[in-house]
Amino acid sequence: MLTLTYVYADQTAVLGPLAIYAEPHAYDLCAAHGERLSAPRGWEVLRLVSDVDTRGPSEDDLLALADAVREAARPAPVERRPAAEEPGREIARKGHLRVLTTD
Image (cartoon, rainbow, N blue to C red):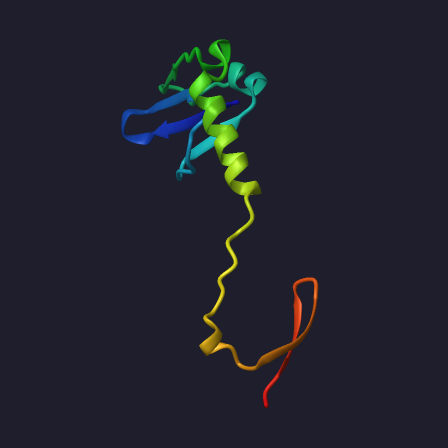
């Protein structure tokens, strides 16, 4: 994947690595369409070469991904109120469900 960006003031089309964030006047292209790209007459096409595809992910990238997956899989902490703030007294329980009385 590649990102195409136009610089109208310089009459230049820049074709480079896939952008990290969305930006107006930037368009993502597949490799086949990036190779066949042509610009309007009088415009220059700059093709920025990146070796990211040949290197692949680094060990830091893989560790960051593993940490993100672990964090997403971790259950959210259950917020418990102190007994004084409970609206009633518990008279029955089944799993995580409780039956409370207000007397």
